[in-house]
Image (cartoon, rainbow, N blue to C red; front, side):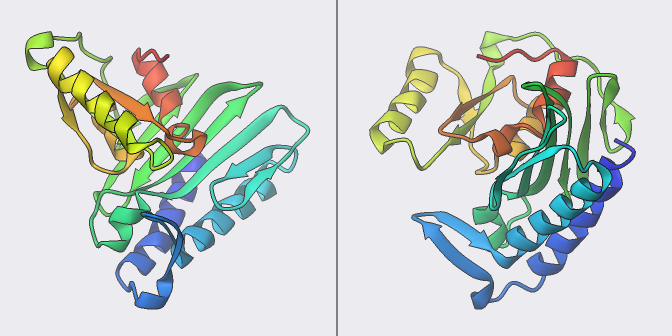
Length: 222
C-alpha cells in the first residue's frame, strides 16, 4: 500500500482534471448506457505504467486495455473510473479502483473516490483503513433495518434485474440502494452504511479493489 496509496491519488487527480473540464468530445459510447471517456483511458494508462515499472513480472488486467499476462502469479486489476456514467453526468459517485490477486486470491486493494474525498484500502497483512483511519469489523445483520447496495449490469436482461429487485423488496423486505457505482456501494458496505452488496452482471474490475479490504473486515461472498 505504500505504492498503491500515492498511485491511486495520482490517478484520482488526473481523473479529477478531466471531471472538472468535461466536454462533448471527451465521451464515446461503447454500448447502451456504457460510456468511456478520454479520462478512463488516460487513468488506466498511468496506473498500468506505474505498476509495470514497479512490478515488471506481474500481470495487469484493465477494463479498457484487457489482460497483459505476467510470470509471477500476481495480477493487478484496474478500473480506471468505476461509475463512468456518474462521471460524465457530473455526479461525485465514482472512483479509481486497483486490486491485486495472487494465485487467484484477492490479497490487497484500494478504492479512491477523489470527488468524495474518500480512500478505502487494505488487505491481507494490511489493516483496512478509510482515509488512513482503521475501520472496525463489520457489524451484525439486523433484518428489521436491513439495507443492501445493488449493482445492475446492463448485460443482464431487464426482466432478470427486475426480478432481483422484487425478491429483495417483496420476498426479503430489504431496502436497497443503487448509486450506479459498485466501488461506492462497497465503500458503504465497509463503513456499515449498508449490510451487503448484490452484484448482478458486474466484472472483476468492479469489485477487486474493495474486495480484499472487505474480506479483512469479515465479509463473505458467494
